[in-house]
Length: 119
Length: 107
Image (tube, rainbow over all chains, first blue to last red; front, side, top):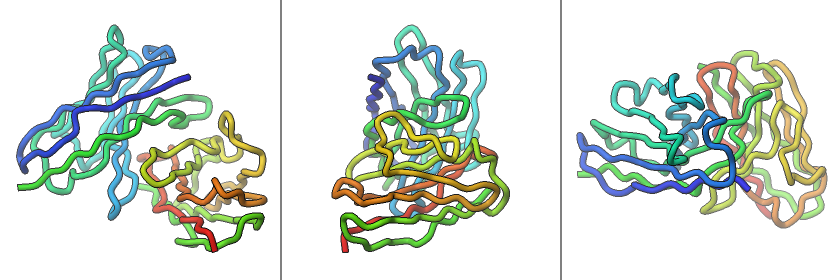
């Protein structure tokens, strides 16, 4: 059974940085594109970033482009999200999710990690 | 960006009743790129329906979905106690976006 486990959330100051990690278990990690999705009570669910299975293609929401960097290590079955220049509005629960294709869907989600950006 | 509008915001029903949830898109969405998720308090979203009408693994057949173009519907034929939750639609056609959710609560 596929499982995802996020870590790295916490409190950061505006302008600061955090690095989130997502450990993958129970499936062939290198065969699947992966995404980060965040959630707040005010804005709901928002797709943040995605990366291809090999890591050669990355995609970002306009709200995080130029500040966040997604990456993966297929040898360690790990997905990461480096978050720089954090803003108060980046405060959210961040989920990593496994992508499946034909048709496209996010078919496995981690439990989420809370990021709070506050002075 | 395609905006997904879900209605109603809250649906108050009793166990055994039928639930009909709507997801309307601001532009046409490919049926194969519309999915539904269920989320319970304190939990991550769980994939329910993909490709507009295919149930995910382990999802009971009381969950069904239909639609095309800009109008999509999730139906729960007979509500079980564990079905009371928030339901979200998501599209993958353009700039992946989610609806704001419909809460199905016990009446």
